[in-house]
Length: 404
Image (cartoon, one colour):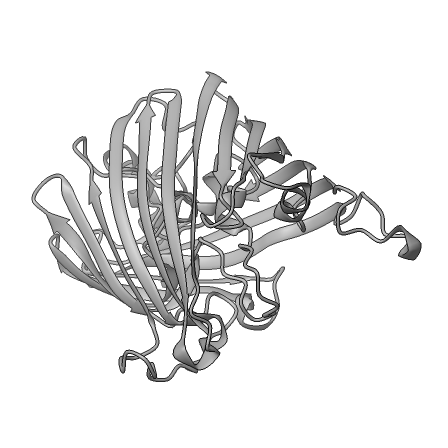
């Protein structure tokens, strides 16, 4: 026991001594682990490391819905889905082995079922130009999702990614959304030269809630009914940190532009084939952060559904944050979505404002945001009423977050 204690102290001391020469580690996708973090074990040569981490979020929510879709006879209220919630209670560990293997495992205790296992993966990268990542992790699509969870600009992701789309069929199992998020699969990735990066992978296409293999072959295309995804990045100023606001990164100049595409074969209970395209950009310049995305989704039904119509949706956002002080970041976002498809007129406009305050030296972050849902360009009042069903017209959120 004494020998183990001495070895641990030496490892921690070595880590602290070399803090200034190490980069920030955000591969775990949850929190950024800096070199000044004491609680991590690392070998003297740096080939082996073990870093536990924790992220807890508690939010107070207020959501006000329009009268459309509410039945007052059943005492349905305009204010719903309000109160306190814990969106994330993540405990995990990450690290490196044999100089070319990185790994990560985390559970989200606020979820149940398959989503309890948030991530579980290992990444073998023998060279800078090639690596293989296997397990459950973020699919290569959307800057908003690929940002470290604890360092997003606002507590809630853009609604254009998370809201379900609308189509004129009563199919309860067909509610696609543009965002893809976490999934099980395998991916090759790496860098091409100094500025370019690539990711290409196969995933189940069933999302974070399912941890088993339950897919088949496509009856129409005769290929495995999986999510096929790829993403290319351009980072002319070096690797882009996966953050939208970190008080320890106020002296950077980093730029990232990326294009992505994926197709989910026989998704939505084997009912549709969903194709997504995305274009994204982000810039960190000292205290300033700017980000923007534009995405498109085509939904076509499988032959067994005997529906010959197809639907196209698009949306995006532009957002920015600025640290008015080393601990206070102000945020703005304009989010938009063609939720009812290009075959019908009308758009959702969703502006939001927010503020983040980082309590120095504690790992605590206080975030607040307000979002408004506006509707424009609809041909009829019924189309206007239907377009924002299930989405709060006024929503506010205050979040207290602790990371370690």
